[in-house]
Image 1: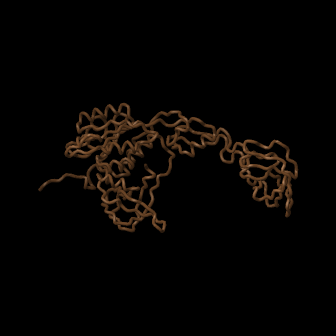
Image 2: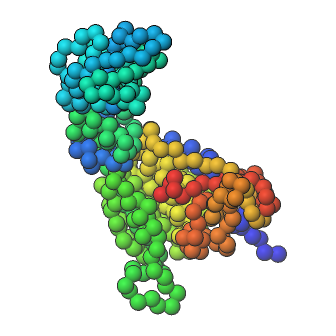
Image 3: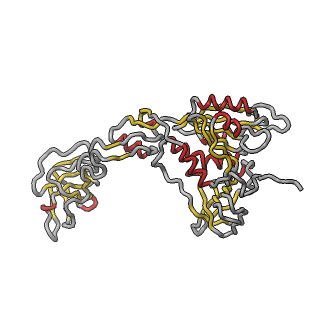
Length: 419
């Protein structure tokens, strides 16, 4: 009888850890990179703030009109009757009224204009009747109406943006409105990427029997294409323990993170895990996830190392589920846009083995009743990159789930919140 060994189809293989365990270990091991840079606010989109921003003055800076209309003193209004007021001047945003307003008089005022001293209410122009230099109004108006108080939006000294905030267009506009031209942001992370494998060729090289073009590096180049990351492209390295060990050691001297693809399984030519063990330390390398079961995580000196699988779909799945959260912690991100996971109704049966998390590729859409539905993109093999190209979301099937019937609810993770 043949004595078999554990394989990637087994759910009780020694050394396997769950998705949640893997993520917790990764986040416990990585730390925020030190350092910051001061840059102009127009260059801060999607950068992470490294300082507290407080308001240097009130917003609005002055009590002002919320509408176009007429500034009145409510004491001038006649009860249960129409009041005639004389229009004695005008106030515009940036051009305040400087005259004296006496009883029985009013000011024509525009949105944003400073409120004159005697005015305690603004009447919308649509609620008046203009007769040459006078207006007619009724008695329904109250003190304080249509007036924006100084500091109503933001008080001087108030914290408006915290450190760890990923800056958005609205944040940048807010900074500009406060006259802040430069801010401190966390420094960029240096991320080295490398593809491994004797069968991998660069685009432009002729393919020979059994060889393929390197898609993984292009996946990583685009997934890492963001303003807070500096990418170091190490190219393709052949399956050679000595060469890989040297390449990883050299990269660890200047990179914060190394991400390799391929060579983390148990094949005779899988050297990535061995190179990591030789040059650094390995934390784990097998996770109960499909696709992406072989994933080596560890450190070389102070450099964080991710050895992702060789199949391109597994590269994308493991990047978004494990690498991206680690990068965000290293970047010091504490306050960012929500990346929702919500429930959708599957329109087809989904195959699933209990005992592992499965991340399938799906298409979510809203039906005529407003219900979110999801279907797979077809065959779910980890080498079928087209399954990612057709998809707009991950279908996340939890560790303990088994086969799913059409009509049941499953968790979905839209790509728009990740990419």
